[in-house]
Image (cartoon, rainbow, N blue to C red; front, side, top):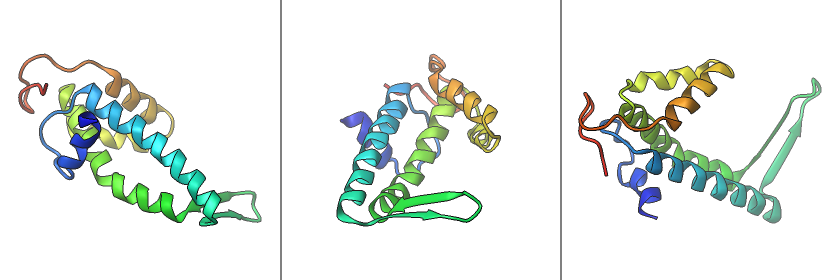
Length: 126
C-alpha cells in the first residue's frame, strides 16, 4: 500500500527517482480503480456515450473524469521520476506524443531496471 501512496505524498515532485515497484503499483492500481469507477458511473447513470455522424464516438463518466484529474499530476510526476531512475531526462516523457512508437519506447523505459547507486538525479530509492 505504501508504494501506491508514495506518488500522492510527492504529488507534484518532479525531482528524484522512483523505483519500478512504485511506478507499476501506482499505475496498475489506478487502472483497476478506474475500471471500477467506470462501472459505478454506468450503474448510477453518470456515464455518457456520444456517437458522432462521422463514426467517432466518445464516452465518459463524471466520476471517472474527476478521478482522472486527481491522478494526472502524480502520474506524470512518478513517470518523470521513473525516467530519472533509468538515468534519462524527464523530457523523454514527450516521446509519448509520438503515436504507437513513442508509447512502446516509454513502456520499455518503464520496464528497465534502475541505474544502481547514485546518478545525476540522486541516490537510488529503497
